[in-house]
Image (cartoon, rainbow, N blue to C red; front, side):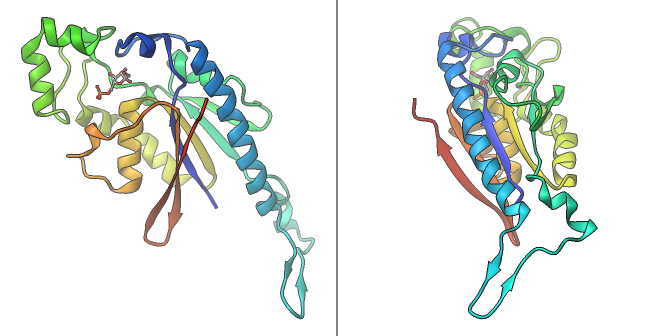
Length: 229
Ligand code: F6P
């Protein structure tokens, strides 16, 4: 089956300090998550590969084996899995241990984290102390609140920015691992799992989780894994 995996990058230096936005590198714990993630996807991908290659189907009386046929050639390869990251260092570093021979890796700007405009690099406490009205406004309407300053975004903006990515995800047939950021992961998960926009900006979505959306006839089925260091 095709799977859309969604995860956040490994812990960054900014996460460790509680700063939002920015373009920091991974902290040591984040590098360890990155390595675990590559092993995890490798294992899952190998399983899917075996499925795609086809096993012998057996029942009581008969054995059905894969026929040698030109149409089957593609199936002999493991099912492809693409890896999409944002263009920020913390997601690109999270996929550094993936074998580029086995995974097609794409860096996509639209997967960058929500842009906090003038508040990039601050902690929530600093924003609350220095800009209490802005802080309050975001608490009151997190979906539509747009960060001040050039390029500042709201969740509503992010939903628009992700539309093309979602169209592409719906179009292609193989599995994709999306290594992205908290607001983006919320937006993507809420799309695939039909979570209303009123809940979406407050979804718990800690570092170290992998969410897998698998298509079923009536909507997607969600599996969740947690990295235990
Ligand atoms: O703190 C990590 C982070 O990804 C920030 O870069 C971003 O601004 C924030 O989370 C998004 O979460 P929230 O919308 O809850 O502030």
